[in-house]
Length: 96
Image 1: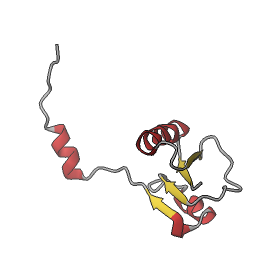
Image 2: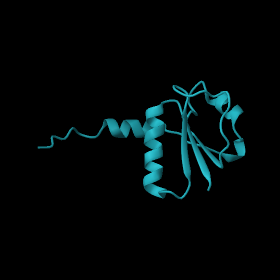
Image 3: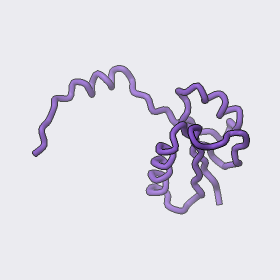
Image 4: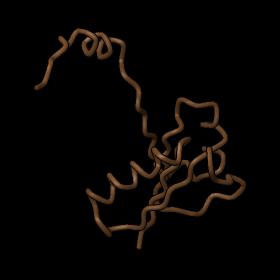
């Protein structure tokens, strides 16, 4: 069975991504997680795909040096400035 390894800074984020992927794909593949805040990165287990969510951190280059870059999918969770401005302009709504 194919293995997917989610690499994040936060372990809570890793679990959230894992749950989301499991809800989408079920048991189609093995989903593992590794986070910088809680796990040892001396050796990273082999995987068929690495979802790397550390792209904007100081750990990005280190993480990438530990995995097969050809199997990496970079997850970028940033907002464009125009999107932030759009969100700022949404009027406050009271929900009763």
